[in-house]
Every structure is written in C-alpha cells, then in structure tokens.
Amino acid sequence: MRQRTIAEPYKIKMVEPIKMTTRAEREGLMKEAGFNTFLLKSEDVYIDLLTDSGTSAMSDRQWAGMFLGDEAYAGSRNFYHLEAAVREVYGFRHTVPTHQGRAAEHITSQLRVKPGQFVPMNMYFTTTREHAERAGGVFFDCIIDEAHDPQSKHPFKGNVDLAKLQKLVDEKGAESIAYLSIAPCVNMAGGQPLSMANLREVAAWAKKYRLSIIFDATRALENAYFIQQREKGYAAKSVREILREMMSYGEGCTMSSKKDNLVNIGGFLATNNEDFFVKAKEMVVVFEGLHTYGGLAGRDMEAVARGIEEMVDDAYIASRVRQVEYLGSRLLEAGVPIVEPIGGHAVFLDAKRFLPDMPQDHFPSQALAAALYVDSGVRSMERGIVSAGRDPKTGEHRRPKLELVRLTIPRRVYTNLHMDVVAESCQALLEERKKIRGLDMVYEPESLRFFQARFEAR
Ligand code: F0G
Image 1 (tube, rainbow, N blue to C red):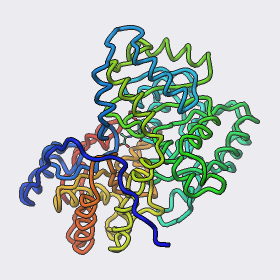
Image 2: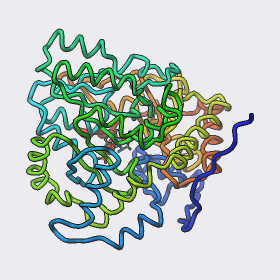
Image 3: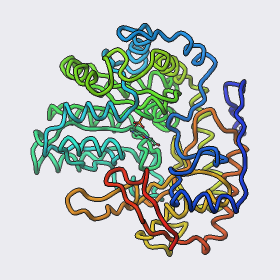
Image 4: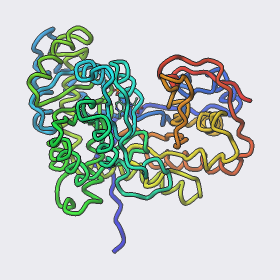
C-alpha cells in the first residue's frame, strides 16, 4: 500500500509577513555581519532556519493561557500548572523553573560537579559543556563512534558507548564521575536519537556504580517518536508513554522548553532527588528568581505547561519530524551531502563533502552558511570547528570530525513549500560550489565563540 500523507493536525490562524531581499543586498548584509549568520538582523532573513529554539508558533490555547498569567512574586498559580504538567508528562516530582535551558545547566553543574570530575555526555552540547567546565568538570565523550561519521546509517546514532564509560571507570574510578549527562536526540550529532534498549543498559550500568543520569531532555519528545517508529516493541505505544519510560531511567533533567515544549522562552530543572531539589531551589533564587518563577513571568510558565500537554500528541510529533524528513529527502534526491539518517529537528549539510577542497582552518561550514544566505536569504548555522571552540588546556582549535551546517526547522512555522525553496537553494550552491571562498576569523570571543565571532573572505 502506498504511504499516505500525514498533514499537520492544525490550521493557520495568524500570519507574519516575510520579505525577500535582492542578492546584492544580501552580499552587503552578510559582509556587514562578519559572515556570521547570528549577527544578521532577523528582518533581513527570508526563511529562518538558524534554530528551532524559541522559534515555535504557539497554539491558540497557549496564547489564551498567556492572558491567565498570575504575576505574583511568589506561588503563582501558573507555577503549579507547570509543576503538574512536568510531573504528569516527564514523571519528575519537583520542578525548578528557569528562564531557559542553560540556566538549569548552570545550577546543575554548580551543585553536582566537583573540580576535576568527569562529566560524560553523549557528544557535547555547547552550553552544557561550557557549564560543566566552568564548574571545574572535564567533558568526556561517551557517544558511539558512528555518531561522528556523517555517513553511518545507524538508526540510533545517539547511543551511549558503554565500553567507553567502563574504560573511564576502570582507569579513573567511579568517584571521578560527577553524573552522566545524557541527551536524547543528540543535537550536535545531527538530531540523532538513542534507543530505549541502550538507555536501559546505561541505567543498569550507572546503578551498579551508584552514578546518576541527569538528562538534557531538550528534544526527548522527538527521540520518543523515533523509538516509536524504529524500535521493536514500541510501535503500538504512544509518544507520551515512551517519553515517560525514557525519563524513568534518570534522576532528573535539565530542560530548554524553547524546543519540545513549543514556547518562545522558558526552561526548568526537574528531579526526584529531594536533596538536589532543595539545593537547586536555594541556588535559583540567587541567579534567576524565586523558586516559583525562576526568571519567567507567570504567563510564560502557563505557556510552557500548556505546551507540555500539547506536544505529546502522536499526530503533531509525526508531522513535525516528517517535515524535517521531507527537506532531507529533497536534498538527498538532489545529491546534496547531508548527515544520515535525517534527524529530528534539523537537516545537517555535510560541509566536508560539500566543499571537499576547503581546509578546516578556512571554516568551511561557516563559509557555506554565509553562501546559503547570499543565495536565497535562508539563514542556517555553523556546527563545525567554530562551534567546537578551543581546548581550554592547550588553547588549540578543537577539530571536530563533523563539519556541518544546520538547517533547523522551527515547530509549526513553515510549510513544505518553504522547504522546497531551501532545497533548491542548496542544490544551486552545490552546482556552483567552486565559487565558495574560505574565511579568516578576525574577531574571536573567549567562550561560545560561534555566537559573535567575525570573519572576512579569504
Ligand atoms: N541542550 C541542548 C541539546 C540544546 O540544543 C540547547 C540549546 C540547550 C541545551 C540550551 O538551552 O538555549 O534554552 O539555554 N540549543 C539551541 C540551539 C541554542 O539552537 O540548538 P537554552
């Protein structure tokens, strides 16, 4: 039987005009922005695939909830809605709201990492690693090798390699590990999921050594969808049930609600560990705000609570991930090199294969992202040597194997015709790839340099 189309389980009630600039204008704008797409003005962008973070379209129900904000300093009713939604959907008893994910990472790292301890992660994420390092921790990559190979078609490239963890414990002892920071749908690997079987094994292993798993649950829902689609025994389960089972293997999570939770701002730290909760509550007051608002307005917490309830709809998440797959398939048909399998939140162009002659020191992904903007006004993001930053000990560039450009799809925002425009632009660039020039970095911030670094054409 032919596969039937699944359309979005919603219709559009409000629109926001976007405008196309001319190629000559975009050439000037890109130069002015130092060849860094983060430094472009949003109004100069036609299709904005910079990130899926905080860029979702909220539903009428969420917007209605914004008018029910209880803007009290303490004990806002919206906090209790948020707490109830997290309990119900993620299964964690205690919630500490934060203004976004990295604030929850900051609190977690400060409370749970002792200087010199390792923090194993299934590949790094920029802010997560940064906070672990600021707390004196040492990042340890425990993802399977396939994740570093953009052409490996492993269905669960986000899996943890237990042998790597075992080696660390054998050599350094379990007490040298702060906790396991496990991210479903690994962003930097291309939005690749881990399997429930892997998670179960990691949890059993961690228990043996009395180590905790603290999830970076940012895109856990998208991971739940892949488990439903790809893993034996889960086809008949709802994403809601799958997500709940995934989270049951962790002691808690940090969360950027700006992704899965379908809001423009917000995050939280959630846990079943009383002691961690009490300490986190004390710390959030110093950095974010009282523990019943954590830097968010009451209305924002209401939108998060409603987003959490809405996201666990099988039809919604299917249409969401399938749109990403649609863009990826179009690119594959056109022969554009991308990371496979296609991820949950983004399609990643493989800049190493796109620009095989450009040395990594000429920042190929940065150059490709700039060229894409000049061609069509599509904004993407570098995820290669610039994002990887420098080794804090040696001061050398970290040289990641993956040199990628991320085309990140906001949730419920663009149609598949927008995806067609993006695919056609990538194809046009591939045909003219010889014309894409490398870059020199002329300004480099000390940390998270990709956000503000500036470049010039070589
Ligand atoms: N963890 C992951 C896996 C993320 O992708 C992000 C943010 C964070 C944590 C931090 O959350 O932004 O709310 O403070 N990722 C964004 C992105 C910035 O574009 O991928 P935040």
